[in-house]
Amino acid sequence: MKLLSIDYIPGCDIEALGMVKGTVVQCKSFGHDFMAGMKTLVGGEIAGYTEMLNEARQLSVKRMVDEAVALGADAIIGIRYGSAEIMQGAAECIAYGTAVKILHENR
Image 1 (cartoon, rainbow, N blue to C red):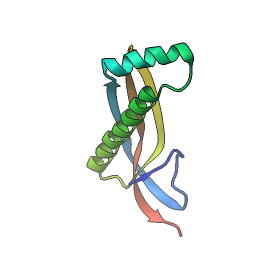
Image 2 (image 1 turned 180 degrees about the vertical axis):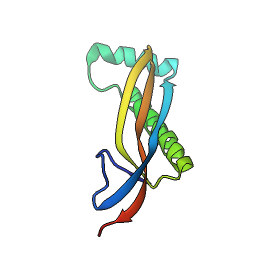
Image 3 (image 1 turned 135 degrees about the vertical axis):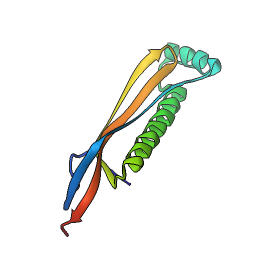
Image 4 (image 1 turned 120 degrees about the horizontal axis):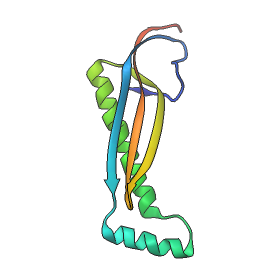
């Protein structure tokens, strides 16, 4: 499955099948949350939250791809990501784009 942030596939004629999305709400354990709070006192990257968001992003992309496969898509174009804090220590991550079928490669 091709995944592109641009709104076309270079050298291909495509048919749009519809919007697809994947979403997940993920949180860290109390221990990670406590350590993150301590990190805010001294500054620097909060690795636990970076890891949490990376995991959430990967899962949301997998769910988006699963939706596209169910539609018979060959690719997803115009992919975007969004995230929001749901509550302290929990974040929503969404991936969305347009599922497309490749009709013809012009190469």
